[in-house]
Image (cartoon, rainbow, N blue to C red; front, side):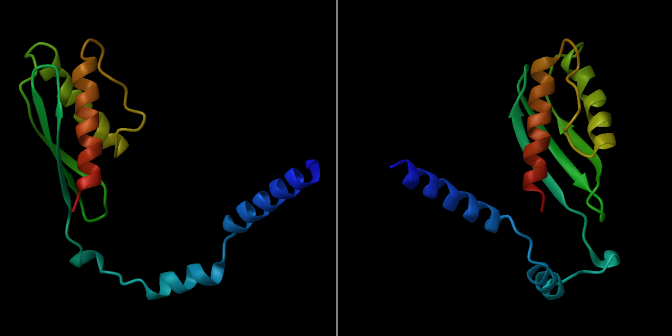
Length: 129
């Protein structure tokens, strides 16, 4: 029984390593067959999403440039004037600078707004056309 378990483990590892292999020929063929669009003809994309904030829904529209970098984020919200509403421009600047929400900290005192805004931006990035 022990030998059977060892054999099954070795076989599973062999399949795992084989699946992780990189076949350069396949990668080249895929790249060669891919259709590319010249940069001057590429259209900027836009993604939109909504998340529930502290004071209501936060609607975001993430605008990407031709190079796929976030250029701007348009926002509609009903967050509290003194806290959440002040946090959104700070978050917007940080997300544009980071080109995404990864590594962007929440604004102190506006955790719910921060989490909702970053969640909406992440969803908008996924929804970008």
